[in-house]
Image (cartoon, rainbow, N blue to C red):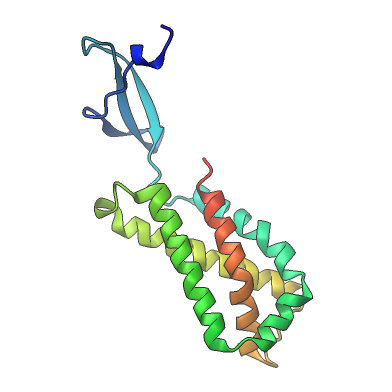
Length: 172
C-alpha cells in the first residue's frame, strides 16, 4: 500500500459511540470492495467535563498572569470608559463563541446547543474568576475603594485570558 488511495475512509457509515466514558466518532476504513478493514476513532468533544474545566482554568492563567502584572493594564482600567470595556468584553465572548463553535460544534450544534452555551459561558466565567482572584491576590483590584475600576481591570485582562482558556480547552 503505497498511497492513502488504497484505504479510503468512508464517512457515510460513521456513528457516535461512548468509549471509555467519552464520545467518539467511529469511522469505518474500507477497502476498494467496501469491506470494513478497521475503524478510526475521532473524539467528539461536545460534552463539557471536569477535565475541560481544569484545562480552561490553566489556560486562562497562561495569559492572565503576564497581562495582569503590567501597569498598562491597570492604567487602562482607570482610563477607559466603562462602555469601551463592556464592548471589549462582548468581543471576547463572541470570539470564544466562534472558536468553540468552529472547533467543537460546527456539525453538531442543533443536537448540542445546551452544551455549546454551557461551554462558552463556562470558559468566559472561569476566565473572569481566575483573573479576579489573581488581581485580588496581587492587590490590583481596588475592591471597596472603586469597584467599577476593579471590574474594568478584570474585564480587560479577561480578554486574553479567555482566548487562551478556549485554546487550551481545544487541546485533547
